[in-house]
View 1 (cartoon, rainbow, N blue to C red):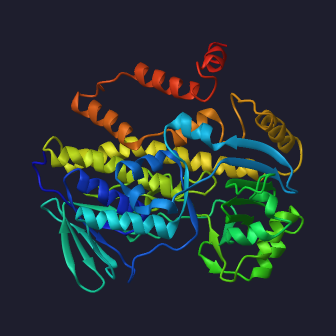
View 2 (cartoon, rainbow, N blue to C red; view 1 turned 120 degrees about the horizontal axis):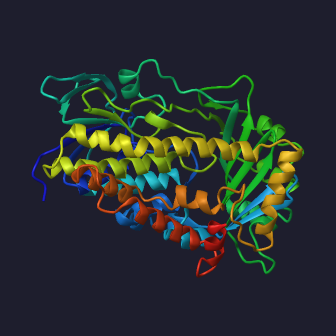
View 3 (cartoon, helix red, strand yellow; view 1 turned 90 degrees about the vertical axis):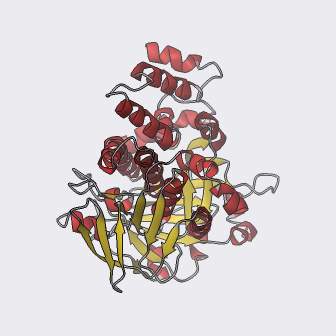
Length: 462
């Protein structure tokens, strides 16, 4: 049972911040969210809720609030620019190996569900409350002031205010998110029925019997790629010079960008309604620290580690941060640690994981953008077994590579936090030793293969 009152201020009511607020209240804390916007909501299109975070939505009851707006799809098809299929992942296999579903949801529906559960849990969400100043007090608390002059005092402040974070600028004014390349993305949604009624594009959403199918399709090329799910589209491309702000674009520019692509996807691009913007892919860090020297202000999500979108892990990593940090703060609420201890545990556990996600996301983008030549030919050849229904030991299709699936999508932020907490409470010795953890991971990966995992075990010995 909680023994200490902990009042946490979260700057920013985005996906990561709101999920974090729910997790903290579940742990027994009080939360006030200060949101700069005059109304709540998320801009953008669809977002993937991969198994590592769908399990959090289920645990917190958020999935029931979102309901049928969480959509499952059956397969991932990797294609050349001209539409030739070169790789394949059965999504059910990923779900079985990780133990959780893989959903697609519109950002708006996800955010609405998070906000509803947060408010039901007792989280105070204050809109039109742009933070202008943070001061660390001698009492160990943090004073926060908004542009409209409202003042607050918190035991801990969490900066969950995105890529252009005011909290990060306060802590680390020299840090500026940058585009690592000229890679950007257009985002758009084309109604499914528009795709289905067109004879040219129908085969992308129907099987040979005319039944509706929901898939993820990736067209790969040196100049960009197109990632389409339930015809929510992410259209990757390169811009020289690189840009660092979102800006509207003319639809003709979008269409010209994909000259020479598969006629089916070009036809779908022609159906995109007006109002498309170019989104730069900005990367923050890795940073040496996510917190103030006093450990009473800490960063979360894109404020700490924005990344490219090639593994669908930007929002997911933010949500993991929130769940992990809340678990650490439960020690404070239970009287077993200080706020500083909890923040230190959070940084120790999450900073390496976020760095890994940044790197694997960048790597996947590189794989998808390979120019025609030996590397591209090797990539395509290594994906061929997947088309024949074979299960690869390793694959350049990172959405289906067994090791990557477990590292990204099989990860459980709360279990990881519990492991770090156990070590903290036992003078550095976790209740479960490292060998047990490694065996568990091996067993999870084995589930990817034959029922008894024999294929994996033999290859491991070799």
